[in-house]
Length: 200
Image (cartoon, rainbow, N blue to C red; front, side, top):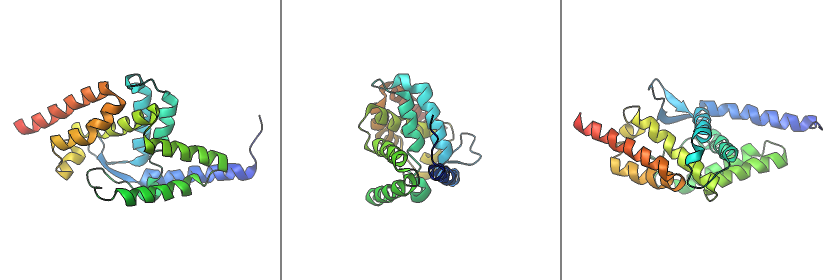
């Protein structure tokens, strides 16, 4: 086994040190116990475990490890571009996409060229959502905050005045595309959550 040149190791360590900043990017989503907001590093870790546990429910057979890789890199761009909650980012899609593209090129560019290119392609694959793995990864990226919101008094839905219809329209197609089975369960949770709110 050949070892990497010292300069390549230095590049890899610089990239890993840079990733520590993801722990400081606060998302709008709360923790389920509502003690604080979730950060983007925690979100990526949680989603990776969603993939390990739930991959059997994907619409198409997927390579679970590949889904995990997509989820681990998908929000790294938030180090530069920040988090943009879907309920409050309407009308900014082009600017956000450009900022995230620049962020991806800078951050993955810290790595040795081959490795940086590999991770950049994973990030682009997630964004394009055309492969079975990326479609399922996108579904999980919608499922996780949906689950949290139903368990935290509405979370971002309550904060942004989001209606049940808006939840079904914004989450449903993405989750169902990746996993009809997970959307069936998730939509029931959504209906139960809003029904409980109406009766209280």
